[in-house]
Amino acid sequence: MARSMGSASVMSAAVMGLDVRPVSVEVSLITGTPIIQIVGLAQGAVREGRERIRAAAAQMGLHVPGLRITVNLAPADLPKTGAALDLPIMLGILCAKGDIAQDALRGTMAVGELGLDGSLRSVRGALPIALYAAADPNVDRLLLPSANLREASAAEGIELGASESLGRILVALKNGGRRLTPALLSPARGLPQDETPAAGEFDLSAVKGQPVAKRALEIAAAGGHNLLLSGCPGSGKTSLARCLPGLLPRLALPEAVDVTAIHSVAGLLSDGAGLKRTRPFRAPHHSISEAGLIGGGSRPRPGEASLAHHGVLFLDELPEFGRRTLEALRQPIEEGQVRIVRAAGSASFPAEFTLVAAMNPCPCGYGGVSGRCRCPDESVRRYRRRVSGPLLDRIDLLVDVPAVRWEDLAGKGPVEASAAVRRRVSRARALASRRQGNTNARIAPARLERVCAVDRGGHALLRKAVTCLDLTARGYHRALRVARTIADLDARARVSEGHIAEAIRFRGSI
Image (cartoon, rainbow, N blue to C red; front, side):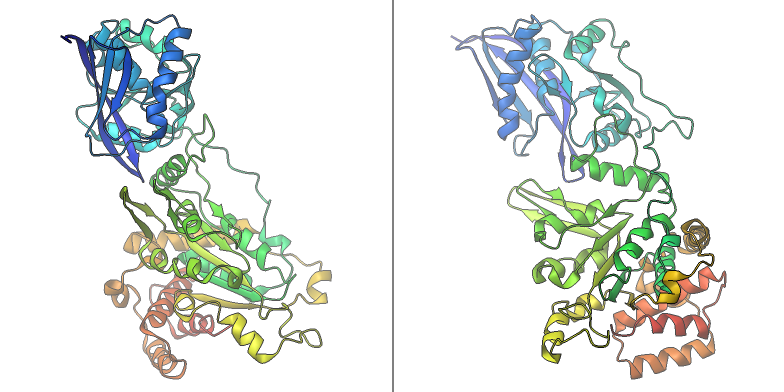
């Protein structure tokens, strides 16, 4: 008859999207056929952990008892993926065997992948797990690999214990658990930060001419507005788009935590990385799939739209993207988030990005250039119809980028650098933040009329624009938000007729 030889329980966690779910790793040792059986919807990499645990134990001289070891991952109806449960399973086995006292693991959550030599390797989602542990009153300490320590240090109110090997963790647990690497603290707020990339890599001063496009870029940066640049090859569309991150202020602390958490879940943080303090710039190729752009998969993962959260999503050659792929952007543009529903579960990812798109005016690219374009009218119309009206209606600024003139190319006069524009953008964003708590592009329709107080001349111009330009209700709201941003750049409390006129100018068709 089988009889129990010991049991233990260790706290851990599983990441579903950006949500963290607590997982209780329950281990039971009973007499019977020597085997490690993992139950509780353990998938691929979790089940393979049995072999990693045996190999690591043998390499370190630990004795895994020749008993029937049953590991239950509760709740049993929550799918568990990845290798982050290796460490808590190993600790549970050793605790059930009596090598570690159960009291040493009380209030302790653990995550980590085991190497065959007993080393600990980084896991995805360490920052979301640390934030969850900090908010859980039942968790006092989080054990994790050293490679995740700088990332997890962004979570306040939780003791972090990190090591490069299982052996050091076991020694620490047997000695009260106080010998593990402490959390890294930096002067700014105790938070490790990634270094700022070299300034001037994409500076506005390097772009010749294009004053209208540069003005649109400044407005887009100040208000978080979506922008479409249309022009022939070589006119500077891509260069302008790549200058946009340099016009934006550095990420505030809550924004940095959000961006780092998304990149952590996506597995894009390098080992030892800290908080990302520069705004992301994502430029996917036009062959990208819908799942790649929006997110998806059997285990929902963030797509490019979410990886661009609080930053810039650049879509070059916009009409070349798949129609269905582009239409999938409509929801995140409006709502600032992506919801993915799959049979195995659902997940939500934030996606508050500034969309910058670029396209040619016609299939050959030289529409409007005298003597170079031979595209039939129907071919041009068919090319432009690849970008749907509903998607264009969600873009605030439509800008024609003409070919650069010789005078601009040969000009030696001073050109405004990104740093000067960034100062104006930062002041405008600060005004908007104090007024409504977010960027002007995110003003809710219910608050729009109150936040965007327009003078009498501006009202008359808006009425004429709605009548003559056939603006939709969404187009009207977006023109009003852009006008509010222009007024903020001028440091004006009230939106004037001139601000409305400039905003409507950018609502024209391309």
